[in-house]
Image 1 (cartoon, one colour):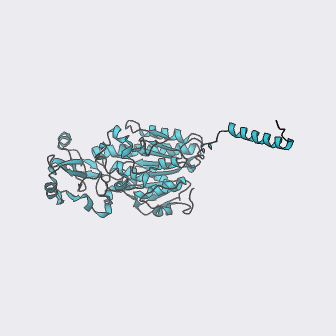
Image 2: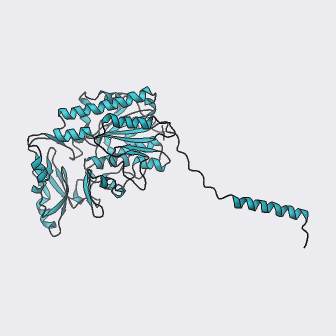
Image 3: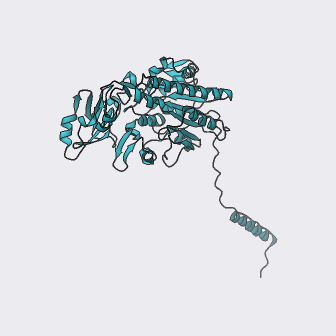
Length: 426
C-alpha cells in the first residue's frame, strides 16, 4: 500500500469532516415569521340598518362622542341590492356584490343550490364566499391576525382558511356580551391579540323590520347598542388603550317604513308555473321556467304599480349589478315602502302592523348608511363628504399596512379623514 503524504492526508481528512458535517445537517426551513405585535389594533363595527339620519335623533350619545373625537362622513352610499349579506361582504372586500358573488340575502347557484341567511350550512359553504378576500383573510395572508364576532360570513372558511378567532352568528348573544368578547381579545398582549377585528350588531335591524324604523322597539335597540359602544370605549379608556385603537363604526344600509297595506304577494307578480322566484322582499329575482321565457318577459318587463322589472343586463348602470351568473334573468325592484313576499307568509303576518324594510334603491335617503371613526390615524372633529361603501376596504388595508386585494374601491374619498394622508400605516 502506498503511503499518503502528510499534506494530502490532512486535506483528505478536512474534506471528510466537512462532508460528514453536511450529511448530519438536514436542510433548514426558515422558521415561520412571527406576526408583528398589534400595537395599533383595528376594530370595525357594523350596526345593521343604522340609517344616517338616526345620528340626529339624540338617542346615541356614545356614538356621537366617537364622532366628536374623530371623523364622520355625511353618509355612506350602500351597494345594490341594499341587503345585509351583500353589503357586509362589500365593506370587507371592497367589491360590489355583482363582483364578489354574494348577490342577495337569498340566492341560487346551479352547483351549490339555495343560499339563505337562516341556513348555517349554506353560510359555512366556502364557495359562496370565494369571489372576494375579506380583510381578515388578507391580514392573515400578510402574517397578521384576524378575528370576527358574528360578522355575516365571518365563520366561513374563505379561500382555504378561517379567521384566527371567530364566533358564529347567534342572535341570543347580547350587545354587551359581544363587546365583552371583543374586549377579551383586545386585552391580550400585543403579541397575540388580533390586528383586525370585525364586530356586528343586528338587533336594530330585527326590531325595525318587525315594528318599523320609528317604533319604540327600534329606538330601544338603538339605545342598547349605543350603551354597548359606551361600555367598549370606557373599558378601553380605563386600560389606557382607547387612543391606540383605530375604531371604525359603519352600517350596511338604512331602513324605510312599510305602512300598513303596502305588502303584496309575490305570486301576484309572477306565478310558480311561470318562474322560480329566487329572492323576495324588495329586490325580486325571477328565473323563468323553461318554455315560459317570452311569457314572463311580456308580463314583467317595464313599469308596474309599486315596482319595475328589467332584464339582468339592462338594470340601471348606477347599480353596478347584473353580470354575475347567480343573478337571475329578470330583476324586479319594489318602490320604497313596498314589499313583495310569499303569499303564505303574508297570510300569517299581522295585518295592522307598520313594518320596516331595506333593499330599496341605494340613492334613497332612507338607505344611507353611516361612517364614524376615531383613533391615532384619524383627524378629530372632521366631517367628510359622502362616499360609496366599496371605499371602506382600501382604508382598512391602508390602516393595517397590507397590500389590498383586487377591489372596486378608491381610498381617495377617505384621505381627508386621516391625520397623515401620505402615510402608509399609522
